[in-house]
Image (cartoon, helix red, strand yellow):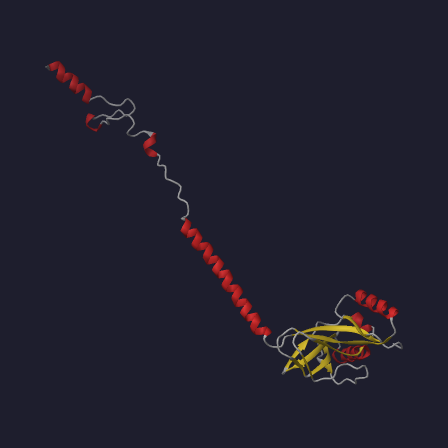
Amino acid sequence: MSRHLGDERSRRNRVCPHHAVSSPAVVSTSCHAFGPRSLLKHEPLRMPHPMTLAAFILAVIGTITATAALTWNILTFIWQGAWPKLTPIVGFQSGAGLVVIEANRDFRDVRESLMSAAHQMPHGPLVIGVKVVNAGRAPFHVAEWALRSDPSNTSLKQFDNPLDSPAVPCDIPPKASQTFFTDLKAAYALAQASKTIDGKPQRVVVTVSSGGRTYATKPVAPPVLALGRPPSQ
């Protein structure tokens, strides 16, 4: 009987060799209760919910679509009226009609183009003016057009019309264009006269007035204006 009790007491007091403690009351019955495996927690990788990703994509597509629709509505509203596009031109009249090129391009291109065209057909004096394209959906009314020298803000508006430039006022139908022009010598004389008044280098633009508003082209290249210099100067 005493031997049996001794064996039972011996089993109760047996401890794990890796976790020996001073009191048998706190002895673990498992050798791996406090082992490394109990400290590592393997959390499963959580992927975005398919419905959340789909909702995000739909929201982005909806935003893009709404922005595009708003932009189109604004452009449609603008195009419902008259919408002029102005380009300064230089050229000459010939038996085949008016030969022009953009006057704000590189001077070498302008000169070569004019010389090439002049060699192929008889021509009159050099002219300068503006090509007005009505990109809107309503007629564009041209009250007047002019040559303006900046920064002196000096304008030449009253032109003699010996070159058969279209008379103003006039209306330009939607998607149509009209070219107004005068002698290039007038633009050169305007730039020179404005320079003596203001004392600063001048930029010549062509303006078109309509409905109380004035539209202006980009400046004409100064070497192009110099083509209108009289031979005596």
